[in-house]
Image 1 (cartoon, rainbow, N blue to C red):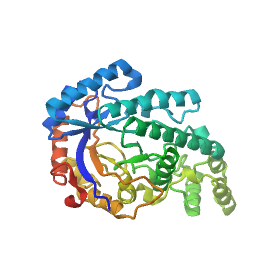
Image 2 (cartoon, helix red, strand yellow):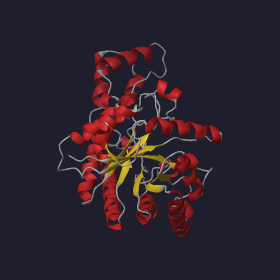
Image 3 (cartoon, rainbow, N blue to C red):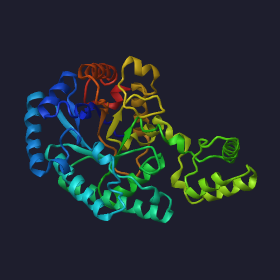
Image 4 (tube, rainbow, N blue to C red):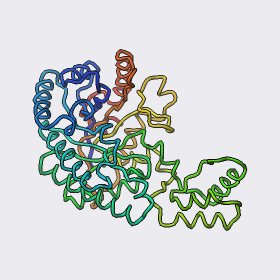
Length: 388
């Protein structure tokens, strides 16, 4: 059984538009007692915004600052810029090609140059795609194909590991446990190279909004609607089902049957209740997640909160449960259809900083967060079995 080494790292997104030079954010990270960083594209290393010449200079700055501080860039990661678009699942094939060849491949090349891995999320399916099962299947296959091309490119370039982040809504796959397992398997097989996911411990806050409703749920929502509730909380996925619901004048079996039938063939629009369980993700797929994004969450929103005493009192993420859940995944039998289980996991703090946040206050919260996680990872590179 693989017994991975565990490292505590931090995403430097907290430094965006504040500490922007590698020497600056590495000094801040070192002062927090951390020596591994995930460099966000938002913190001045986006190949589309910056250009090839700048990225070469950035690589040199990374080498110099790393030698001075002892802080190492373990992974590069995409940021808000690419997350905000349809990206690699765009309806225009030229845009998809641009994302693959002018963003993802250059980032893989940069990651290789500094000895780092690469993680990202830069795709979404438009509603017109989601509403058409045949078109959805086509776009999903296109996405798998492009991810496989990237995985093979990264392998040849020496960038490892590489993977995509899991999300929490139908238009951003993978968002279910089974869907994530399928993506890992299909992309790795097509590429002939390993491809992984990043589990974010706060990205289970949306799935339960998209659980397939029972007949009783639909009838109850119809009654509320007929009673004057203009928008009762109900997820039906397919627009035709919503149209039938909106036009209904009765909550009888005939109407409910029509709505249920309209959701047939749209399984990809629905999650299981357990897809909203962080610890299920870690227990089943933590062994295919060489990067785990850490944030405190109440399970309702993905606010990327710190692990302060105040946030922990309301939060559902606990260090011992994270580590024990990952151990369960590593104890599962090896699956010949999946890539090798990684020998290193970077548990990566990902805390967002508001535009009006005060630097000193943010750093205090980060220091308290690091103190919390050092209870469970007192020393980097220890084996998982030593920490449980």
